[in-house]
Length: 349
View (cartoon, rainbow, N blue to C red):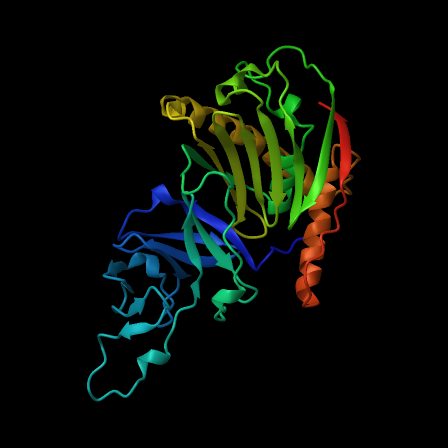
């Protein structure tokens, strides 16, 4: 399966990376997208191509709530993409500029990330009532991430997703002098999983008493991991004093590369002092996953037959099953039916 899922929200960039009055270019799902922030703080997204002569609009500038093309000064409204002005026109021209529009995308800033919605056909207007809510992390309200890191994966989004959710690669890929150093110690893991709206989750369970680092959240610390289409994974730790969450979401650039966004949220008031260390560790972990995927591409170039085993690869199997069902439901114009059944998975790691 090589198609990229649509009718979905994808992260374009962390909100902190876009200042008022600025614009950035992103290639998402093979499309050129211009993302900007108006002076009032609101974000917008539109196709990054001027309909006049095809130059990318990112080379232009913002004027009030409009985007101006650098080539001939054409101005476009950032709300609906409509053309507001063509400076070269005179009173003798009868061109109806209201008929000139740039395709726009639904764009929202939620919990510190800027999300863009990709409909089945990005060139057609979408009824706002047909757009689902932006994915959010429960229990964190409007809190933004304390740490937010981004890394490029030179692979199809499928390999990035199943690589990051893989429960058995940790002892091999994430082995460093500062983490899991020394001889590998394996033990059997047994976890209960169940379906959710468009994915599956690890049913919350209490962390063992020996897990001392989690004591900063208080007593009775539980963990819940949820994966939902197209690529949103949340790992939430809840204690009787504080909570923390690791959010990972992946956005396809095209069929051969993608961007992973990983953010850490917390309700611990004094945790900010550890932000430099947490940023460093997050980058290291993501880089280890990226490096092994780059090595994997050397083998995949020969198009080998691949295998997924039970139970360590069951989550990967589930991902492909729900992705297939999602596409089939859209093609048949019917509601999505989650094919996942509750199940206990066991593996050694």
